[in-house]
Picture 1 (cartoon, rainbow, N blue to C red):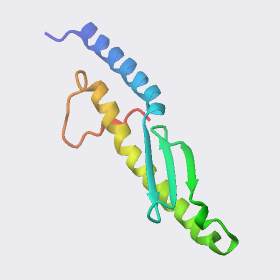
Picture 2: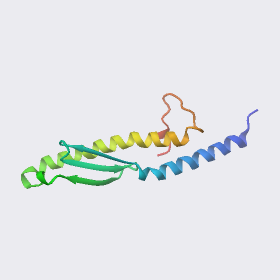
Picture 3: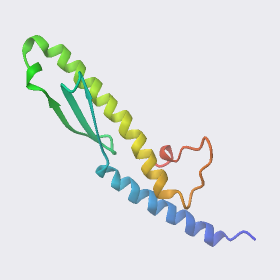
Picture 4: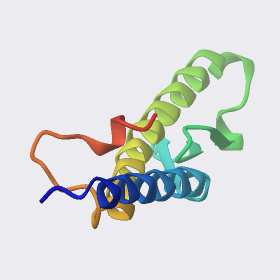
Length: 111
């Protein structure tokens, strides 16, 4: 027989786990680089840029455009990489409650 109270308890537990997992996303960092390490960008699991590091060898007026392009490339790669890690983190925190259904992306549900 269907136990509505048990199901509601499981939903509440899942919500609490997801909330906690989302709060922990600030502790997941990903650093990526472009230009063979000349520019590095670090972002967290909340998709916030934590830092940008630019090698002193490329800071001058003549290299301004390339520097900007390298920053964009590094930040975009870091955001893509941390998005994957964030989804895996949420999935691992809810694996005992929410089943692993092919094509069902848990990471997009709780945004």
